[in-house]
Amino acid sequence: MKRQLRLDIVHRRDVLLGAAGAAAFISLLAMGGKASAQENVPTAADLLKSIHGDAKPTEARINVDLPEIAENGNTVPFGIVVESPMTGTDYVKAIHVVATGNPRPEVATFLLTPDSGKAAISSRMRLGKTQDIIVVAEMSDGKFYMGKRAVKVTIGGCGG
Amino acid sequence: MAAKPRIKIPDKAKVGEVIEIKTLIAHVMETGQRKDKDGKPIPRNIIHTFEAKFAGKPVFTAKLFSGTSSNPYIAFFMKVPGPGDLEFLWVDDAGEKVTEKMKLNVA
Figure 1 (tube, rainbow over the protein chains, first blue to last red):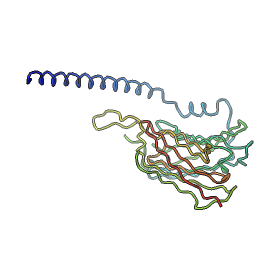
Figure 2: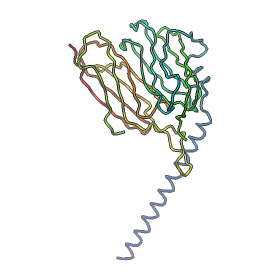
Figure 3: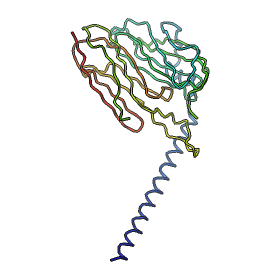
Figure 4: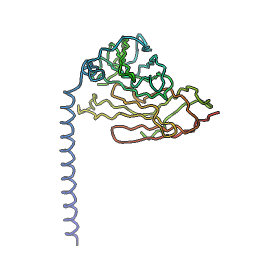
């Protein structure tokens, strides 16, 4: 009876070790995947290209509200207003926010509808260092508009 | 991400009025860039999607990336089409979802 119990324990430990090994292996694989993905981080230029393709956004109609100097890059409040009637046939479809100097420049993309009533959003972004923020608005007629603001960052906010 | 989100909407609204909706949810928004004290990278876990619907119809969506601050605050506008409920959804990289429903008092 006692021996039987021992065997059971050994078996269970084997199983546990096996499971732990498998888990470690899987997480290694996952890390490998992440690492290779990190090598393919799109630059701000790639990102902007993926947003508006070959179209050249006009620098107009966008008001970007950002502090000139951000003391804490971890949380920089921003507001964006795009001039648009926001009707069923003429509205802002998307507002893309790109932090050109961040290790990963994507901040957020806001998707609007004619029901939005007003093309305005506010949120908070992380800024790793002093840099330009580019906002691209995609209109329902396929046109693109752009706004740009420079922000000085005293303490970077990208961890590490 | 179990914390209850905070949402601010006007107490009352009229049909056709454009109202601002402010939302805030507690979330670490781990960028995937940081390393723990053993030098191992901390996997990314951010809220990647926020959605707002009114009376079942999508009004506003935000796709968030690592450049959005922790405890994401998102404010947006909506033109009140009539009476109905506002529904909110947050989804993070771990697949966790938080939903919230609020009635809009339409006068």
